[in-house]
Each structure stands twice: as structure tokens, then as C-alpha cells.
Length: 407
Image (cartoon, rainbow, N blue to C red):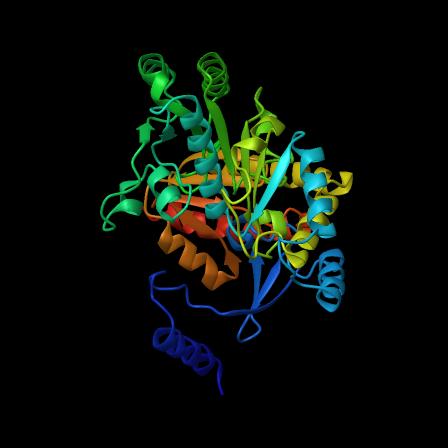
């Protein structure tokens, strides 16, 4: 079978057996990975600047994670939340120690974590007043695709075609302090929570301002409103600190996590302050698979590795190199409008659609992503060595140079 035939057969089977809800997939089938490198069906090598949508925090085939998962598979994968689970307790302890003291509910994904957060906030609000159930979210946010999280997502394209969404969500402009204050002052008796991403990932790597977050904190405290911070994409050292909220003068009442939390093993978390635990008593929420032995082994291993000073230093050094490189590029190539982000959660806004550049990069051996039509995302594994950072940025500049000179 020649090279073109290998991919052709995979594409044919994809169309025959799978829902086509992801549109036209990019023309590659990755078959293995090593560190920050990926290899396709024909053994072509790629620099991974995407890490599976910020999921593969430790890269591919990380020795500590691989060893821990192999041992856990040999020992015990799943029992049930009817029983005590040592791995779950150990993972929850690490989350509490690295985020803030509280309690952890394990689920299977970021969407489920946000569903749990919405349920908790509304139940707590309704215990105070029969009309205190509304949740404020922000334009261009993304919180998931189940009905509750989809309803919280302030992007019309995500909700279109599904009929009536879950009521009780108010969408406000992001980073708009005046509009936020007016809404809360006038309607605080109906509002149970403010839910936000500190960096809007799917919205185009839009960063919350310090003053905006300070105002959220002050208003929430004054009017007894919970703050839910969705760190499904920004959490787990992605921004240079273990959690993005640690860049701001705020500790959320509810924190949601997923993606990089399990380094590729599906897992999600709702972590809350201790005072909220009684809001969801037995039977109020649950999950069959959430927090099983395998998933929690992945969580513990990931957190332990990312807490190492050597990894923290690598994130700082790598991100600084990339930002410096991009700032120089911005001053050289007209197609780059702006660069923004934190840590290794980086967006490059272009003056044109980004998907053609993503495809061109893939053909040259570089995996990047585009969101919000014209914002390229660079989100490599947090363990990426500097040699591969430099290689990837050189590939990226070669492509942008062609774009910049084609206007």
C-alpha cells in the first residue's frame, strides 16, 4: 500500500462509519507520538504546537504518566462511586493543595464539570430566593455543548438549531465593567452566579482585564453571588501558573477543570469552597465513570509532574521565547494584527482567515489551530524542549512570511 492509499482508506472508513459533525478533518491520521512530536500514517514527523486542544500537557508518551497508567491498568481500572477510591482521594488532595482548600467532584469532561457548576449555583440561589437562579456569562464564551453548558455559551452559532435553550442565562460584553455593574445593581436579586473564562479560548484568546475581575469580585461579594471560573482550557499550568485565577486577585467559589488535567485521559472536575458542599446532597448529582481509578491516576501524575520546578521553568522560558519571537514577527509581517495570551496559551490574530494557514502548516510538519475564524492558536505540550520550540517557530515564520508578502 503506497502512502496516498493509506490515508485514502482511513478517510473512506471515516465517512462510512462516523458522524461527520466535525466537518472536513485535516488530511492526516496520527498514529504515534513522542514528547512534542507526532507521526502520521506514513511516518511523517510533525512538531506539535496544539497538544490536542491543550490536552496533552505532558506531551506524548511521557514516561512517568505511561508507567503510572500501565500499573493502574494492571491493577484496577474502575469500580464505582459507591465505594471508597484511594486514587480519587489522592487526586482531590492535590487539587485542593494547588488551587484552594475545598472539595472536588470528579466527572468525565469539561462540559460535565460546567453542568455540575451550573446546577450547584442555581440550587444554592433558589435556596435563598425562588427567583435567584439567573447566571451571567459573557459574549464569545464557550462552556460546552450539553444543554446547560450550551445555554451558558454566549455564541449564537453554538445554540442555533436546537430549539429553546435552558432559560436563566444573561449574556454581557466581556471586559465591560459599566454594563456588568448596571446589570448586577439593577437585577442582583435574580442573579445566583457569574460564570467566566479568564482567557476566552474558543472566543479567540481574549484575556480578562485585572480591573474587570476585581469588579466581578467586589460585586459578587456585595450581592451574595457565586463566581464560577471555567478553567477547562486554562487550568493545569497552561498559563504559567497552575490555574489562571492565580494571576488575578480572586479565588473562585467554583472552579471547573478538564483538558490538561488528565494529560489525554478523559476527566473533568468541579472544585468548590467547603461551604458549598451541602448544596448538592446525596442523589443531587452523580456520574458512573467520573473519577475512576485510571482517570485519577492520570490526574495525580499530571499534577505532580507539572508542580516540578523544572517544568515551571520550562513553561516560563518557552513562552517568553515564543512571545518575543511573535512580537518581532508582528513588526515585520503585515498579516499579524495582534498577539495575546498567557504562558503557553497563545493567540495570533490575523487580518485574514486562519484555516488556510493551519493547512499549510500541517503540510510543512507543524500542527497549529485556528479559532474565531482568524486567530491562530499555539498551545504546545508544557514539557516541550526549547529545541523543538525553536524549530516550530522557524516553521511558523516561514509560513507567515509567505502570507505577509502576498498581500
